Image 1 (cartoon, rainbow, N blue to C red):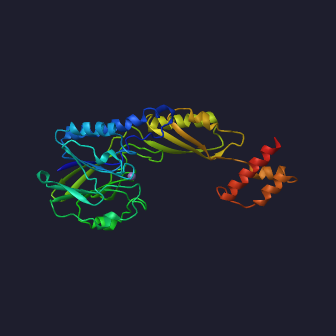
Image 2 (cartoon, rainbow, N blue to C red):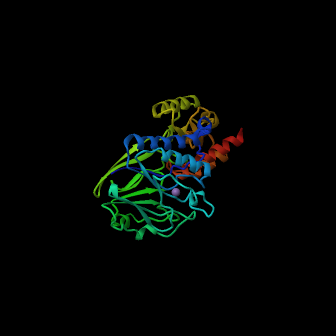
Image 3 (cartoon, rainbow, N blue to C red):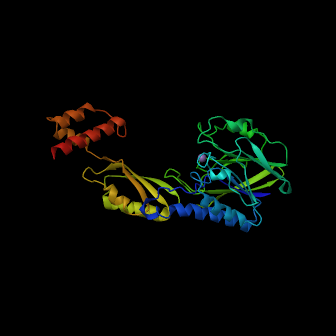
Length: 350
Ligand SMILES: [Mn+2]
């Protein structure tokens, strides 16, 4: 039995993407989702498992129709999905009344239920969110019914307000694979067995690193999985360490080189750190205008020659201020305060 496990597609979201991509970014979430559907068709995947938050918010009727159209074109694959905290089954949710194609099996109940595929020797279990938050550890008591040799749990959550998960309890639950959603960073809680597929595409600027889906194969109760990156873009956080020889031009050049190496498709958040020459000011707006860049923060501090400043200013406020910090170590909070203070006093003189 071959399956693909995706989660947190967040269709309908408008991710932060900077001026270059913002307009197209919502469309890219759909494009990557369609790509996965195509992979299912090409590879004749038996089951497509969607572990919650297919939508970023309550799905519109036309969005459900688009999604179901894509599912309906699958000639081999059956689709099982649950609703997560973002697309929870609200009182007026279209999820309640929508008529899906016959190869689609929503597990939209509040309580654990399962769908049985005898031809695949597989049963898939799951429940859905009927509210934004669920603080009870609902999966702690989840156990397979022994309906089929291969028993899979589709689950969504893992933090305090969204069905807290105890890894050890899950590990001893008896399911041969647990397809998790909600945490956007792809990760295995247990190799080949308890896995967060991660968001299919990064949705938030903090969803750093590559994103994609899980491809798995189960024979009897033995599962083997592979993580397949497929997202169009990645959020990359860069801490650029500057020194006294850097100018704004050299910093921009170094950022340009880094972006060329890491990929022009990606979206960057840049933090300047280290010690800059005291007479250099980095124009963060200009740097952010280079393209691909979502945010630039300047956390550098000026590289003052403190001994010399002290010598030259013994008789005035600046000298007195510096002497208060005698003996503080570079890099410490006190040192940072010292530099900020020197900055302020020097700026006041100008
Ligand atoms: Mn979620």
